[in-house]
Length: 275
Image (spheres, rainbow, N blue to C red):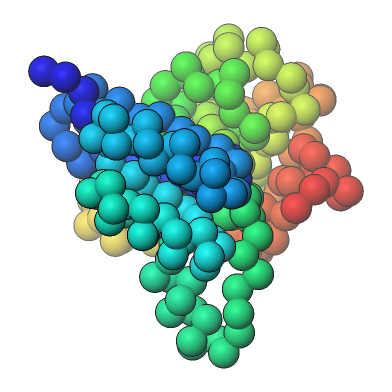
């Protein structure tokens, strides 16, 4: 079966539209294998647009565009009607609606969606990364991780990973368990990316006891919140951190996830990091 042509037309890079098309194609069984996507960038004049539309007419392609200029959108509508081409305007209705609501004319700057789209898709990618590589399940993503969090159970590794992912950072977290060797892969990445997490024993006991209560666990599960076990785990973590002095260590006791995340970013990227 021939792949169906889809032409992306943009006054900028076309990256935002391309990603939206890719995301939409995942909703179909054959996905991208059934479509032939071609991107036309920096289409900013009627002459440029005519060339693209004539190619589309020859191939009977669907036009998907992010044209922000009202004049160009009107011209594209007219020409597509004349050539009997199907076209999808990804931003026109949104711009018109916002213009009415905000009582302000859009600036019609081509390419301005790209930065916003990049940031959005970077966050989505980071969230998927954090979920896939949570709790040391798979060390395969280590080389791509911006940050690696290391600590014993209930030191906020997972919520921190997700919070930082919402900021666009790819984060892995690795549990510390007495008697279980550290993954050797940790030695193969820049050590400044790795952050150790610790917590005060009494606070950790409260957190673990509450966790067990919510789960309805009884019997042998009580050892999870036993102070003796907690002290052993914290001592083991402390020994690991002393062996890896290039890892900054943060005490999460009494700190919000937001505050701890800020400290993690300070330690890994410095306070002058780009936002």
